Amino acid sequence: MPREVEVKSILNKTKKRDSWFLDDYSVNLYSSCSFNCLYCYIRGSKYGSNLEESLSIKTNAIELLDKQLSNRAKKGQYGIIVLSSATDPYLQIEKRYELTRKALEVILKHRFPVHIITKSNLIERDFDLLNKINEKAILPEDLQTSLGRGAIISFSFSTLDDKVARIFEPGAPPPSERLKSLERSLKQDFLSGVSLMPLLPFISDTKEHLNVLFSTFSQLKADYVLPATITLFGDSKADSKTLVLNAIRKHYPHLEKKYLNYFAQGSEMPFYYRDAFYKKMQELLKQYELSNSILEAAEQKKKRPNK
Ligand code: SF4
Image 1 (cartoon, protein in one colour):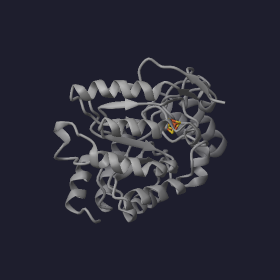
Image 2 (cartoon, rainbow, N blue to C red; image 1 turned 135 degrees about the vertical axis):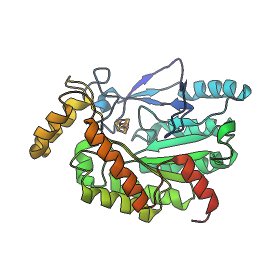
Image 3 (cartoon, rainbow, N blue to C red; image 1 turned 45 degrees about the horizontal axis):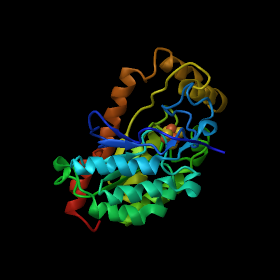
């Protein structure tokens, strides 16, 4: 059973909007995450090695969100709310607690725009509310012309292979299900694309896998693809670096030496790898005619509304 906690604040104002995710605010209705991805950056001693066991529900979240958004709306401080930055908004328990659905009702009431980032097809339950937010949200002044809509939906992938995902994202719905939701989201004409974070070195960043990924997203006509390399932290048993290295040792022993070499010095892949990675991503984006900017994708979508 997840714990129930009360929090003092639920709406976090970001210092500066990130140019990829366009977050002016973030909201995390749950603490920790039952999708339990081994590479997750929230991992560490605070949550323990099984994120599902430390999962908690913020019971006063909706009431607080209503108050905080009302105050921001009175001051005209409209901005994009990212759901979520440190958990998934559509965890298994969302079916029972409906915190995300209730939060979207409050967001619609105060007319804020949202960016949903998820690994779950449960999001389809809320397409009705997201359609209303899409039409009614008041955008921050500098995004009114470029974005022109109130809902952005990103599906997060590290692989398209369900078997690989079972190792690295053991609690999340399989990528094959996510793909179907991405397709349905695009059919509903949401501004919708892919957060390809993180790609797994020598597993999902191989030439073959990258071609499968990009050709699949291109065929579905995803509005954007945002790719990034992996970052792994910490040496304690609950940290992402330890958990990913354990999984590599168990399932990909031939890659163990490479991973140990790469992550011996720190949390990021070496500069030459990252440099080659981003060059390769630019080539693939061009080859498959995909954008890696949500704003650029929004502009393109406006020019061809019935894609
Ligand atoms: S879904 Fe996101 S927040 Fe949840 S464990 Fe995976 S990476 Fe972390």
